[in-house]
Length: 239
Image (tube, rainbow, N blue to C red; front, side, top):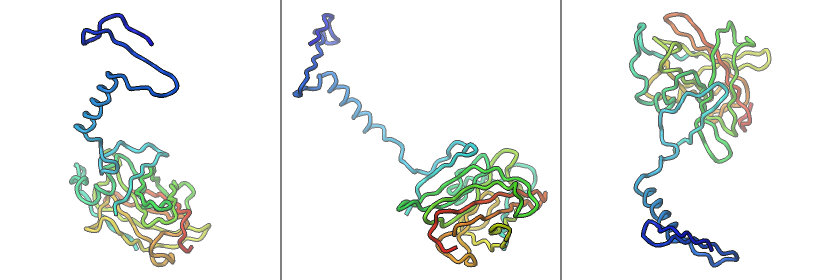
């Protein structure tokens, strides 16, 4: 037993007792503090996990994950050199969360959980799908129901004007053109982001099969192209 001789805040000596072997009681002042903490917790709700929100930029090599609630494609965007109409509204914003840099976007199933995953990527110029300099980003899961991209909504790499998106399946030295099937956004196309479901020519309609898919994103006004690849692995889909 330790006794503090100075008067406590209530005019009486403050006493702290500690016993070994059980039978302890929480000191009265600790009870008051615990009750106060519980009251504050009730009065100020904690943030909801998984709620859509604009997050910080994803650094290179880092991925961001969120749970999922239960030919060439042409994307039209802003024209001219000024700021584009805000891409933060609607399905593209919900899908991409207004990134400040390029990302791949995928929907992956890990065991019994389906998640949306964004991974940082730095698309580079290339001349063909077999170019070894094309950056490759993984997509891993027992099922990968959609793959695609998110473009930055601000900064020097922000898209301006229409763009085309093409894709190829690459297996060693073999290259097969893929007719992209856009599944999001469903209202239309946008140069700021899109998700594509598995095409029928790859033998599966529920999941992208394992393999390397190379994308070319080309702005129509400038002719500038950016290349990146997504390597799908771990799926149960037929190759």
